[in-house]
Image (cartoon, rainbow, N blue to C red; front, side):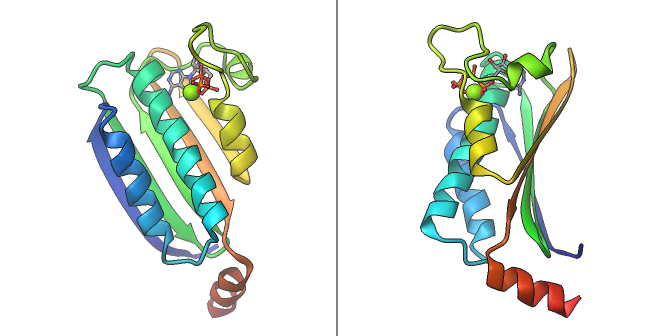
Length: 150
Ligand SMILES: Nc1ncnc2c1ncn2[C@@H]1O[C@H](COP(=O)(O)OP(=O)(O)OP(=O)(O)O)[C@@H](O)[C@H]1O
Ligand SMILES: [Mg+2]
């Protein structure tokens, strides 16, 4: 599938940057006409992935580096969130609802990401890094048009 556009954003693991991440990704996605509901879902998914990197990956230390790469493909918006933090020991368990051991947290971040996006793929190297790849299909008309151009 053809690549139409791509941005890459790198920022420190500060909660203040959550807003920036959401705005950057939704501004990027505005090239295609997702409806308001889709945009809200993309915002929540990005927020969950970035907060996980800040809170769990970097244990709220402010000097971690988070990168977001957003790509518009002929068929989907793809958002990849990467951190070089502590990684996930038991990934299968982490993906389940309520898996975290912090009673303050609901353990629903991955559940939201999976329900709001069409694909969620997590790869992790314990002690080293975590990468979350989120994909959402393009609105039908754009997809038909872009696919026809290829
Ligand atoms: N980037 C990451 N680095 C390290 N561990 C992670 C990362 N993302 C998720 N995890 C682990 O996966 C678990 C599940 O994440 P999830 O977002 O579903 O729930 P949560 O963050 O615990 O709670 P909530 O998102 O509802 O506040 C986390 O508790 C954490 O242990
Ligand atoms: Mg979370």
